[in-house]
Image (cartoon, rainbow, N blue to C red; front, side, top):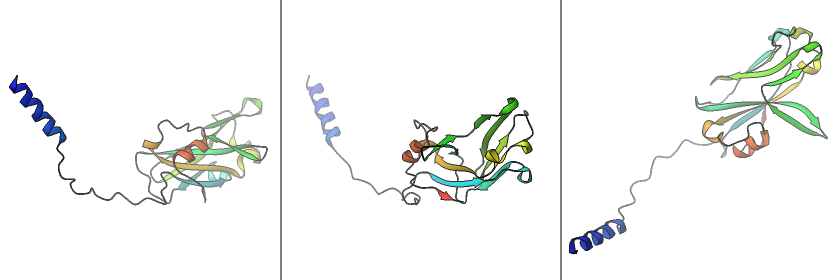
Length: 167
């Protein structure tokens, strides 16, 4: 019984002791005004000359683990812009299918139109090709979990993005 009491006292002694604090860790990389994500807005005219695509370099570092989200200004409702996450598909006359899509690398984002083989893109009217407004958001992968990426406002709030740079 004496041994059990001694072990119990010894366990209490070790759990109540605290050692030196230790040196501080290294300083992390500098942030950009406390922002987690980076974003920009771009207006594009799609035509045959640019092969119905636009490639935009970021102008800042994008890590291999970052996620790029691209939104299109789809419509306006009572003065409020409605943003939709790409890809977005529009069903046109004569069973024609138009898709606004994108892909990305660490260096740039490419936004392009695709007819899915249902028609020739040169037949599109200006409402589908001219002055198309996009917002591109680069988010660290750690911050994307649990966010409704279809909702641009939710992504902006979660990543502390307050405004978009115009390119």
